[in-house]
Image (cartoon, rainbow, N blue to C red; front, side, top):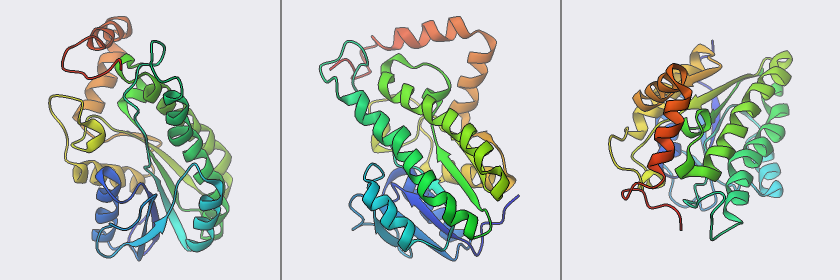
Length: 246
């Protein structure tokens, strides 16, 4: 269990979407200081401290660890979805970029901030992941693969950092009303609701937590009949409402 009030936190990708919602919710919960990391930190929520941060740039990551030396809560939210097919693609570098941001970027942040968190009593890390990391999602091929890698990263980081008292929570997120999910039709969650659910999971010290209805439903479908659910997801790859395959 961890109390978020009074702590300093850093949210990557904190200038819009789910990241901005995490920043706003941390401030609402009484965080002492909230750093909003972004490639372009010019527009962050009122009350947040902007930090220029590209999680794939080791120099900027190291600089952020130096500037944000009081942090005891790290929210790894920065992500990239290229909206390209994985195998039959017109952009073979798209999947590499997704892996660089979603997996290696998260790893860069954990490596850089592990000693910061240790110096501040252990604290907590939350990795904002996706249903696509829990189940193979063909219409998000590179993204799905990178988020699956980040899921196992969270498990391994949890084991490595347990002796220093740092908890690691993997947040499984469904479809949220953000720019990244603009290609998806149907029900979408409010980013602020996802942030609230995610922070509750952090406060409870959960290892893996679903943040919304789609996350719960998808994991249940996969558990009941993996083969059938995989086939259903494969059919969506060719659905006319999904703008993929470019």
